Amino acid sequence: MTQHKLDPIDQEIVQRLSHDARISNRSIAKEVGITEGTVRQRIKRLQKDGLIQFTVVTDSAWQALPIFA
Image 1 (cartoon, rainbow, N blue to C red):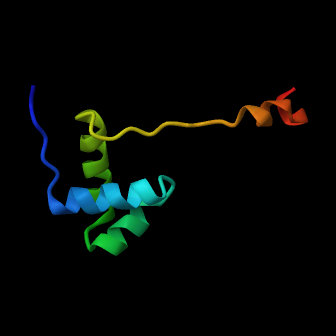
Image 2: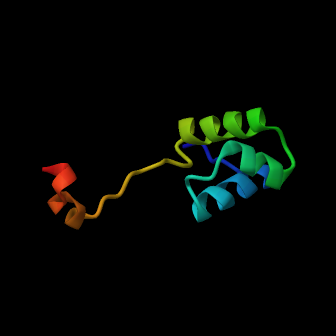
């Protein structure tokens, strides 16, 4: 099994995504001091390597709302 190491930039990206998974790549880039393209590439790599994933969690109470009927 290959061990993955997150460098400091990856750690910064993951930290920001952990706080708010909807944060834009542009915002992350500005806060970390790298380009938006670099953020995008690193997130793709982290996903491909299985180090991060994005998941939707729903509240079952919402299913009772008329918009879901």
